[in-house]
Length: 132
Image (cartoon, rainbow, N blue to C red; front, side):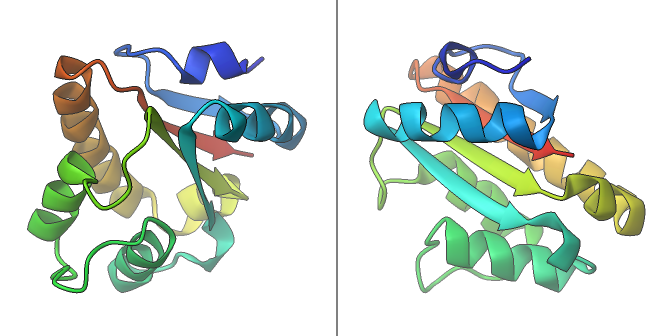
């Protein structure tokens, strides 16, 4: 079970797998507490380019975003254009995402975990939630 309090903490446990019911119950609470919530439809991600485009659009990456892994790393570790008390990215229908792009998601998680480690030094929660 997922609780909003879990997603407001700075912790090494920043990757979550939950049911749709658990996810919808916490989103509104997070947003009302100053946590920036992002949502990506996992079933639409089939390629690296799809992932980069979805991240850039939903997380409002700057115009200079280079559509490559170095740029993803840089943007995830910065977020100065969207100041918040914390950041939570929800991937909906993530079972399809993992089925069609497992290696891609492994690379994404590596970037996410590096960014989460840096955010933890500033005491800022940084979580990703895969909604099955």
